[in-house]
Image (cartoon, rainbow, N blue to C red; front, side, top):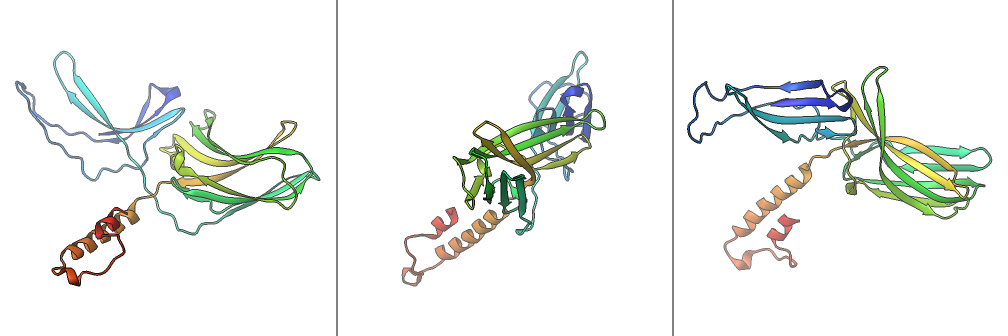
Length: 268
Protein backbone atom coordinates (compact mmCIF):
# COMPACT_ATOMS: atom_id res chain seq x y z
CA UNK A 1 0.00 0.00 0.00
CA UNK A 2 1.47 3.32 -1.11
CA UNK A 3 0.71 7.01 -0.70
CA UNK A 4 2.56 9.21 -3.18
CA UNK A 5 2.71 12.90 -4.10
CA UNK A 6 3.69 13.48 -7.73
CA UNK A 7 4.75 16.90 -9.03
CA UNK A 8 4.23 17.07 -12.79
CA UNK A 9 7.29 19.27 -13.39
CA UNK A 10 9.40 16.75 -11.45
CA UNK A 11 8.06 13.50 -12.85
CA UNK A 12 11.21 11.54 -12.09
CA UNK A 13 10.72 11.86 -8.33
CA UNK A 14 7.80 10.38 -6.41
CA UNK A 15 7.50 11.50 -2.81
CA UNK A 16 6.23 8.59 -0.72
CA UNK A 17 4.54 9.31 2.60
CA UNK A 18 2.89 5.88 3.07
CA UNK A 19 4.69 2.64 2.23
CA UNK A 20 3.55 -0.72 3.65
CA UNK A 21 4.55 -4.12 2.30
CA UNK A 22 3.18 -7.61 2.97
CA UNK A 23 4.51 -10.91 1.58
CA UNK A 24 1.58 -13.06 0.49
CA UNK A 25 3.31 -16.27 -0.60
CA UNK A 26 6.66 -18.01 -0.43
CA UNK A 27 8.66 -18.72 -3.60
CA UNK A 28 7.23 -21.57 -5.63
CA UNK A 29 5.01 -22.46 -8.55
CA UNK A 30 1.39 -21.50 -9.12
CA UNK A 31 -0.34 -24.07 -11.28
CA UNK A 32 -3.98 -23.26 -10.54
CA UNK A 33 -6.22 -20.45 -9.42
CA UNK A 34 -5.38 -19.26 -5.92
CA UNK A 35 -6.49 -16.40 -3.70
CA UNK A 36 -4.38 -14.63 -1.10
CA UNK A 37 -5.94 -12.72 1.77
CA UNK A 38 -4.29 -9.58 3.06
CA UNK A 39 -5.15 -6.74 5.42
CA UNK A 40 -3.65 -3.36 6.25
CA UNK A 41 -5.00 -2.25 9.62
CA UNK A 42 -4.86 1.20 11.23
CA UNK A 43 -3.11 2.78 8.27
CA UNK A 44 -2.45 6.47 8.79
CA UNK A 45 -3.75 8.38 5.77
CA UNK A 46 -2.84 11.98 6.61
CA UNK A 47 -3.93 13.72 3.39
CA UNK A 48 -6.91 13.75 1.06
CA UNK A 49 -6.60 12.37 -2.48
CA UNK A 50 -6.11 15.18 -4.98
CA UNK A 51 -5.58 15.64 -8.72
CA UNK A 52 -4.70 19.17 -9.79
CA UNK A 53 -3.03 21.17 -12.53
CA UNK A 54 0.55 20.52 -11.40
CA UNK A 55 0.32 17.88 -8.68
CA UNK A 56 -1.33 14.55 -7.90
CA UNK A 57 -1.67 12.90 -4.51
CA UNK A 58 -2.81 9.29 -4.68
CA UNK A 59 -3.17 6.17 -2.56
CA UNK A 60 -3.06 2.79 -4.26
CA UNK A 61 -2.52 -0.92 -3.80
CA UNK A 62 0.22 -2.51 -5.89
CA UNK A 63 0.35 -6.30 -6.29
CA UNK A 64 3.63 -7.69 -7.64
CA UNK A 65 4.15 -11.24 -8.87
CA UNK A 66 7.92 -11.76 -9.16
CA UNK A 67 9.08 -13.98 -12.01
CA UNK A 68 12.47 -14.83 -13.48
CA UNK A 69 12.08 -12.87 -16.70
CA UNK A 70 9.72 -10.01 -15.84
CA UNK A 71 7.40 -9.17 -12.97
CA UNK A 72 3.63 -8.92 -13.25
CA UNK A 73 2.40 -5.72 -11.58
CA UNK A 74 -1.19 -4.58 -11.02
CA UNK A 75 -2.26 -1.34 -9.30
CA UNK A 76 -5.62 -0.19 -7.95
CA UNK A 77 -6.23 3.36 -6.72
CA UNK A 78 -7.99 4.16 -3.45
CA UNK A 79 -9.73 7.50 -2.92
CA UNK A 80 -9.28 9.02 0.55
CA UNK A 81 -11.52 11.82 1.84
CA UNK A 82 -10.60 13.82 4.93
CA UNK A 83 -13.62 14.70 7.08
CA UNK A 84 -13.52 17.76 9.31
CA UNK A 85 -15.67 19.51 11.86
CA UNK A 86 -15.99 23.22 12.57
CA UNK A 87 -18.15 25.07 15.08
CA UNK A 88 -21.52 26.16 13.75
CA UNK A 89 -20.72 29.78 14.50
CA UNK A 90 -17.71 31.18 12.70
CA UNK A 91 -16.84 34.77 11.98
CA UNK A 92 -18.53 36.58 9.12
CA UNK A 93 -16.59 38.53 6.50
CA UNK A 94 -17.18 42.28 6.18
CA UNK A 95 -15.10 44.40 3.81
CA UNK A 96 -15.24 47.69 1.97
CA UNK A 97 -14.24 48.39 -1.62
CA UNK A 98 -13.95 51.88 -2.99
CA UNK A 99 -12.53 54.27 -5.55
CA UNK A 100 -12.15 57.77 -4.17
CA UNK A 101 -15.16 59.96 -5.01
CA UNK A 102 -16.40 57.37 -7.55
CA UNK A 103 -17.45 54.15 -5.86
CA UNK A 104 -17.92 52.91 -2.32
CA UNK A 105 -19.48 49.52 -1.56
CA UNK A 106 -19.57 47.18 1.41
CA UNK A 107 -19.95 43.43 1.06
CA UNK A 108 -20.67 40.87 3.72
CA UNK A 109 -20.53 37.06 3.73
CA UNK A 110 -22.22 35.14 6.51
CA UNK A 111 -19.23 32.87 7.27
CA UNK A 112 -15.55 32.43 6.54
CA UNK A 113 -15.57 28.62 6.60
CA UNK A 114 -17.92 26.54 4.41
CA UNK A 115 -18.37 22.82 3.92
CA UNK A 116 -18.47 21.53 0.33
CA UNK A 117 -22.29 21.34 0.22
CA UNK A 118 -22.85 24.66 1.98
CA UNK A 119 -24.51 27.86 0.77
CA UNK A 120 -22.71 31.20 0.70
CA UNK A 121 -25.11 33.89 1.88
CA UNK A 122 -24.23 37.55 1.79
CA UNK A 123 -25.17 41.11 0.79
CA UNK A 124 -23.68 43.92 -1.26
CA UNK A 125 -24.38 47.49 -0.10
CA UNK A 126 -23.86 50.45 -2.47
CA UNK A 127 -22.95 53.55 -0.46
CA UNK A 128 -21.66 55.68 -3.34
CA UNK A 129 -22.07 55.10 -7.09
CA UNK A 130 -20.68 57.66 -9.53
CA UNK A 131 -19.53 55.30 -12.26
CA UNK A 132 -21.77 53.43 -14.66
CA UNK A 133 -21.62 49.79 -13.59
CA UNK A 134 -23.26 47.36 -15.99
CA UNK A 135 -22.40 43.98 -14.51
CA UNK A 136 -21.34 42.37 -11.23
CA UNK A 137 -20.43 38.77 -10.42
CA UNK A 138 -18.75 36.57 -7.83
CA UNK A 139 -16.11 34.08 -8.94
CA UNK A 140 -14.82 31.09 -7.00
CA UNK A 141 -11.10 30.84 -7.66
CA UNK A 142 -8.94 27.86 -6.77
CA UNK A 143 -5.26 28.67 -6.33
CA UNK A 144 -2.88 25.72 -6.44
CA UNK A 145 0.66 26.37 -5.21
CA UNK A 146 3.43 23.84 -5.80
CA UNK A 147 7.14 23.80 -5.04
CA UNK A 148 9.19 25.69 -2.50
CA UNK A 149 11.59 28.59 -2.43
CA UNK A 150 12.45 30.03 -5.85
CA UNK A 151 10.68 27.14 -7.61
CA UNK A 152 7.13 28.06 -6.62
CA UNK A 153 4.34 27.76 -9.17
CA UNK A 154 0.90 29.33 -8.79
CA UNK A 155 -2.00 28.05 -10.87
CA UNK A 156 -5.32 29.92 -10.70
CA UNK A 157 -8.47 28.19 -11.90
CA UNK A 158 -11.90 29.89 -12.00
CA UNK A 159 -14.27 27.20 -10.72
CA UNK A 160 -17.49 29.20 -10.95
CA UNK A 161 -18.90 32.52 -12.12
CA UNK A 162 -22.10 33.63 -10.42
CA UNK A 163 -23.90 36.72 -11.70
CA UNK A 164 -25.15 39.01 -8.95
CA UNK A 165 -26.40 41.98 -10.95
CA UNK A 166 -26.99 42.99 -14.54
CA UNK A 167 -27.57 46.72 -14.81
CA UNK A 168 -26.69 49.92 -13.00
CA UNK A 169 -27.14 50.07 -9.20
CA UNK A 170 -28.17 53.19 -7.31
CA UNK A 171 -26.98 54.59 -4.03
CA UNK A 172 -28.50 52.86 -1.02
CA UNK A 173 -29.30 49.68 -2.94
CA UNK A 174 -28.70 46.30 -1.31
CA UNK A 175 -28.26 43.13 -3.38
CA UNK A 176 -28.48 39.68 -1.73
CA UNK A 177 -26.10 36.80 -2.55
CA UNK A 178 -26.97 33.12 -2.36
CA UNK A 179 -24.39 30.81 -3.93
CA UNK A 180 -24.85 27.03 -3.66
CA UNK A 181 -21.50 25.20 -3.56
CA UNK A 182 -22.88 21.69 -4.10
CA UNK A 183 -23.01 22.12 -7.89
CA UNK A 184 -19.26 22.72 -8.30
CA UNK A 185 -16.21 20.46 -8.29
CA UNK A 186 -14.49 21.56 -5.09
CA UNK A 187 -11.97 20.06 -2.70
CA UNK A 188 -11.23 21.03 0.90
CA UNK A 189 -8.67 23.75 1.51
CA UNK A 190 -5.20 22.17 1.76
CA UNK A 191 -2.25 23.87 3.38
CA UNK A 192 1.36 22.79 2.89
CA UNK A 193 0.50 19.15 2.09
CA UNK A 194 3.59 16.99 2.62
CA UNK A 195 5.53 20.25 2.22
CA UNK A 196 4.88 20.00 -1.52
CA UNK A 197 1.69 21.90 -2.38
CA UNK A 198 -1.27 23.95 -1.13
CA UNK A 199 -4.81 24.51 -2.42
CA UNK A 200 -6.68 27.65 -1.39
CA UNK A 201 -10.04 29.11 -2.40
CA UNK A 202 -11.02 32.75 -2.89
CA UNK A 203 -14.27 34.61 -3.46
CA UNK A 204 -13.60 37.24 -6.11
CA UNK A 205 -16.10 40.11 -6.33
CA UNK A 206 -15.94 41.60 -9.85
CA UNK A 207 -17.56 44.81 -11.11
CA UNK A 208 -17.45 45.83 -14.78
CA UNK A 209 -18.36 49.32 -15.97
CA UNK A 210 -19.65 50.44 -19.35
CA UNK A 211 -16.09 51.04 -20.58
CA UNK A 212 -15.22 47.40 -19.79
CA UNK A 213 -12.98 48.35 -16.87
CA UNK A 214 -12.88 45.72 -14.14
CA UNK A 215 -12.84 46.33 -10.39
CA UNK A 216 -12.40 43.38 -8.08
CA UNK A 217 -11.75 42.37 -4.50
CA UNK A 218 -10.63 38.92 -3.35
CA UNK A 219 -11.30 37.26 -0.01
CA UNK A 220 -10.00 33.85 1.03
CA UNK A 221 -12.48 31.33 2.44
CA UNK A 222 -11.84 27.92 4.00
CA UNK A 223 -13.59 24.88 2.52
CA UNK A 224 -13.93 21.59 4.38
CA UNK A 225 -15.55 18.19 3.87
CA UNK A 226 -18.40 17.44 6.23
CA UNK A 227 -19.05 13.94 7.56
CA UNK A 228 -22.56 12.51 7.18
CA UNK A 229 -22.90 11.78 10.90
CA UNK A 230 -26.24 13.49 11.55
CA UNK A 231 -28.00 11.67 8.73
CA UNK A 232 -26.77 8.29 9.97
CA UNK A 233 -27.91 8.94 13.53
CA UNK A 234 -31.34 10.08 12.33
CA UNK A 235 -31.67 6.94 10.21
CA UNK A 236 -30.70 4.80 13.20
CA UNK A 237 -33.34 6.45 15.37
CA UNK A 238 -35.94 5.92 12.66
CA UNK A 239 -35.01 2.23 12.45
CA UNK A 240 -35.51 1.85 16.21
CA UNK A 241 -38.89 3.59 15.96
CA UNK A 242 -39.85 1.27 13.10
CA UNK A 243 -38.98 -1.83 15.16
CA UNK A 244 -41.11 -0.58 18.05
CA UNK A 245 -43.95 0.18 15.66
CA UNK A 246 -43.84 -3.31 14.13
CA UNK A 247 -43.72 -4.86 17.60
CA UNK A 248 -47.17 -3.51 18.55
CA UNK A 249 -49.52 -6.52 18.85
CA UNK A 250 -53.03 -5.00 18.52
CA UNK A 251 -54.03 -2.64 15.68
CA UNK A 252 -56.27 -0.73 18.08
CA UNK A 253 -53.25 0.13 20.25
CA UNK A 254 -51.14 1.57 17.45
CA UNK A 255 -50.59 5.34 17.59
CA UNK A 256 -52.50 7.53 15.17
CA UNK A 257 -50.49 9.15 12.38
CA UNK A 258 -51.26 11.35 9.39
CA UNK A 259 -50.35 9.29 6.33
CA UNK A 260 -46.60 8.83 7.04
CA UNK A 261 -45.49 5.40 8.20
CA UNK A 262 -42.35 4.58 10.13
CA UNK A 263 -40.85 3.33 6.89
CA UNK A 264 -41.45 6.73 5.28
CA UNK A 265 -39.75 8.43 8.21
CA UNK A 266 -36.74 6.20 7.82
CA UNK A 267 -36.41 7.07 4.13
CA UNK A 268 -36.52 10.75 4.96
